[in-house]
Image (tube, rainbow over all chains, first blue to last red; front, side, top):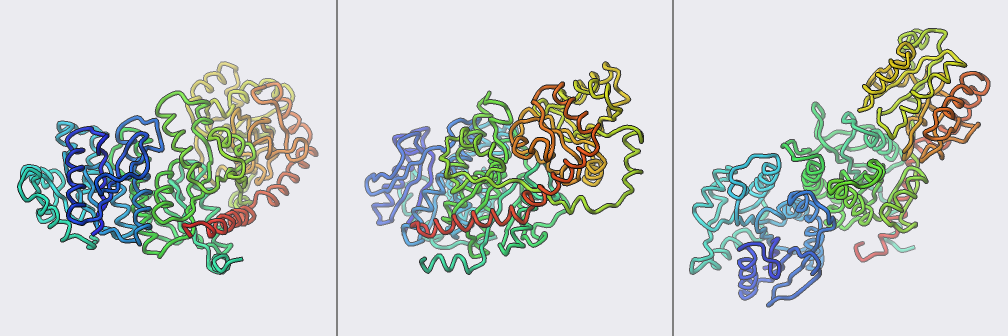
Amino acid sequence: MRVVIFSWEYPPRIVGKLASYVKELAWQLTQTGIETFLVTYHEYLTGEFENGGVKVYRVTNPVKTHISVLTWVLTLNQEVERVAANIYYKSGKQIDLIDVQDWHFIPAAVTLKKAFEIPFIYSVESLEDHRSHEANSPFNMAIKSIEWLGTYEANAVVVKSDWMANEVIRAYKVPEAKVKVVNPEAKHWLESILKVYNELKGRCSYG
Amino acid sequence: MSLKDVVVMVDQLRVMMLTWEFPPRVIGGISPHVYYLSKNLAKEGVKVYVVTCDFPGTPDHEIVDGAEVFRIDSYKNPSPDFASWVYLMNMNMQKEAAAIVKSLGGVDIFHAHDWLVANAGIGLKHVFRRPLLATIHSTEIGRRNGLHSDYERMIHETEAWLTYEAWRVICCSNYMVSHVKWAFNLPEDKLVMIPNGVDVKEYERSTVDLNQFRRRFALPEEKIVLYVGRLVYEKGIQVLISAIPKILEKVNAKFVIVGNGYMKEPLWEKVKHMGLAHKVLFTGFVDDETLRNLQKCADVSVVPSLFEPFGIVALEAMAAKSPVVVSDTGGLSELVEHDLTGVKVYPDNPDSLAWGITRVLLDEAYANKLRENAYRMVVEKYNWEKISRQTKSVYERVLSEYSRTFWA
């Protein structure tokens, strides 16, 4: 199985808790024999790297000056697409699954799904509703609309707790069956992840 | 010649145009430009797909004069500002265009118009590994006369990114070629000049009696001096207003000002203060037909711009057989040959402008000579058939170069 993970943080770039989780996830996946690619951002450490069997691709933003994290994310997505497309073409047009960590690279995952029918998982770390304490300015609503797009287009939404499952269902009216709870603290979390991956592998259902 | 070259030439060339406006959605000059270009490329045998923003009352998918038009969800959620809306709209445009390209079984080339569709064009290029062409109609650094905020710098850098990712960059005048080369540090051989066009047939259809029509705007003994454009500083409308007393010393005329802008109120106050309220008519926006009839009635059309990438208004006046007086700047310098197809005057100089206008108004034989020469030049040089053939040959050149790359 060939999996591509999108994450806006991965060591040495650490913003919050997501970086260490994504590092552990990618490494564990390679240990089970999954060919794992990781596409992430760094301001200047760009290019291809190998980290314990994980193939890491770091891209930078082609537009340096920005007015918000929203515009910053939206011009960065094309670089994520470019690298993901390179992986796709180099590997004989076979990517089984994309796992998007948080909202930042949802636009790229959606375009790749439309273009190549690659299924994707939206792994929720946090929601704009909680980060911005229910603020409803156009800025917050724009980020929420991207999170919604993720829940709508993803083949599965993976969350880390039952509480978050309820929150995702409440905030974006996601069908319950689409939401999978995988607690990273639990003993068999990797098996749970692999179960979700195997269910979705190569399956892209529209609509 | 390889087999691949032959295949490219034999198969119908498929281009996907990306544009944020297409009729009936008309905001600026890109909408008519893409409409005429697409229509005439289709006549040249190119398969044209236009992907554009949706518009109330229009279908999501239709054929418009030979071009297949797809209208996508243009992101109607509230956005913090215009640029954020543009990027969000691009997110939607790109995902929908990706689905369209997949359903079509591919296209040969993507053609993006301005930074407003940069993200979508660049993403599609990499996802489908097909060449991207960009037409730069205008630049942020030119519009704002410099970059004064992060917002403006962000747009400027997005324009730079588009020109960086584009295989070729098309500009509509030699002036714009130089300007874009300077603004984004581009190599000379990346730039192509293909002029803008005008469809003279639009001016041949006559639905009204022009003598009757004229009376709505001027007395029979008054000559009509016409200005068409936004009422903003860089268009130089204030220069024309300052020139009016000098013109009226020599010839009886009515000044018809079409368009809106932030200078409308101050200019109207100035006109009243000058005691010229009876000689100047501000019409605001007018519909296309009224505009064309006005251009046909005008004894002279004035384009006094201080900054002008191309100067489509001068071209339209020429197509309407109205003599033109333009300031010698930007694209206007190239459009007009002094004393042959129009009169050029010094920019930002009311005396020079007054001289040019009175010269045309007082010498009918001279004015008629300008009309005829300019009309002939428009038909020969700025017709959409020719422009489309030039564009098609750029597509073919790019595809031939592309066929020798590892993407092909």
